[in-house]
Amino acid sequence: MAIYDRAIVSLLPAVPRPIVRKISDRYIAGTGIDDAVRTVSSLNGRGMLATVDVLGEEIRSADEARAIAGAYLDVLATIERERLGANVSVKLTALGLKLDRDLARELLEQVVADARDRGSFVRIDMEDSSTTDDALALYRGLREAGHENVGVVLQAYLRRTRADVEALADLRPRVRLCKGIYVEPPELAFRDDDQVRASYARTLERLLDLGCHVGIATHDEWLIRRALEQVARRRLDEDAYEFQMLLGVREERRDQLARAGHRLRVYVPFGSHWYEYSVRRLQENPSIAGYIAGDTIRRLLALR
Ligand code: FDA
Image 1 (tube, rainbow, N blue to C red):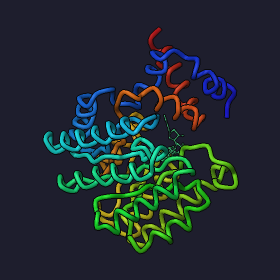
Image 2: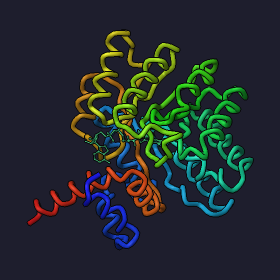
Image 3: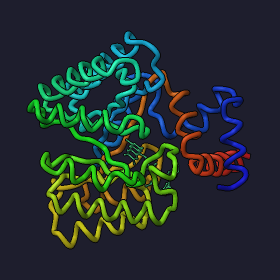
Image 4: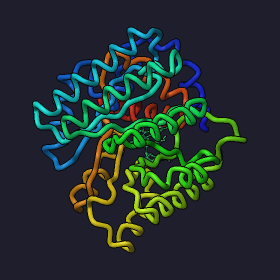
């Protein structure tokens, strides 16, 4: 990691909110649901789908968790009313996982049931490794209770992912596959880029072998090409997989994939907890600070 990356990451808590807001602006739709609707509509207009995330990982009370679940119900109603091409992504800690596991299960089930009634889908985001067992168990519980409109995320950097794929195989899960963004100890996660990539490529192949629908969530060109090779070699039709990217990242490549006929879903976070999200993301994956710093400096220079 470059020295200026480390400096930016360590200084972030001291950076005034408006500046953090500015540097993370392109990654977040805004604070209100109208902002999310505008962003999703614009993506839909360009042939892309979205998954909407209500920012709220830093909640501290059961009431806040209930409020986040309520916000998801509003989002699902809005998606239906506005006929948006979008589903939702949910973080279990935002539904209170760290406060009360039963509350998180209850709220998640509410959101999934509401999504089912509206013909929509809920993706359970994956957070740090202290939540992996709970996330997979809650996912299994929902599937065994008959909920089909729910999917999970696997992180290629975790050493356990290989075994998790096999353990989930009987459910033929809909999986978003990502590298993983949290800082994990080396006993739990590969640190080396090549190992993470190899694990990603291997996991993708295995999931496709099992007939799973895979959300190929990466901006890594090497992995995108590997995935395209798999799609071509297996002659997968467009319902069998989709590419997924974060809002504001590699937009040209994203548009190119969509134009080439691949289903492309963009992760669209919005909400009043934007600050926590921005700082956490930047701290947890310091290399992002480099992208943002570079981009900000370029933009500032362009303004001069
Ligand atoms: P990598 O980080 O190597 O990036 C590849 C290239 O993409 C970079 O070289 C750069 O050009 C560009 N790039 C990447 N990030 C950028 C940025 N912020 N700004 C500008 N350029 C950037 N993680 C997790 O732990 N749990 C989850 O549930 C999810 N969910 C999720 C959903 C979706 C749709 C995506 C795309 C990603 C996630 N992630 C996630 C995050 C994921 O684990 C990972 O941290 C990031 O996607 C970065 O990894 P890449 O595979 O993109 O490779």
